[in-house]
Length: 137
Image 1 (cartoon, rainbow, N blue to C red):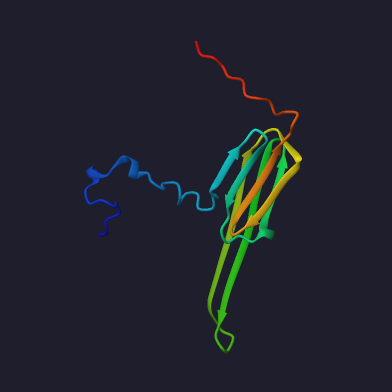
Image 2 (cartoon, rainbow, N blue to C red):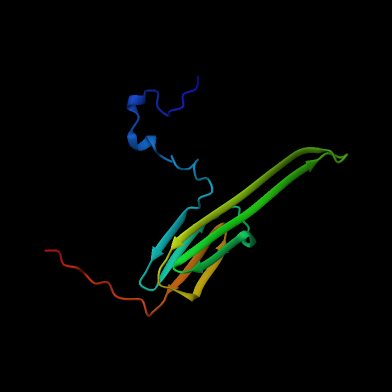
């Protein structure tokens, strides 16, 4: 019987290691995303390795950015007589939303390079307000 745990003794297993990468198998198509907010814009870097640019759809509506990716690949190998010796199919579907308020809908830029979708969403200047510091008593 193979050992499913990385440690031979269950009681020596660190609780923090037990759940490491626990959600990966449950959400295999969930893209890693880095989001940075400045006073004037949101900057997103979304990892989409192996995805072709024409299979990515982006929409912004009502403070929400919608990302949808649909891609399918088919690999057929035949011998010299035309008989199929291997046939594989792969389909990817990603659907994710990001809540990004106060974006100027006419000032959104997207670039796709080396499997990373880079977005700049400028904030609407009329909504940009300085941060008010709240004193604690």
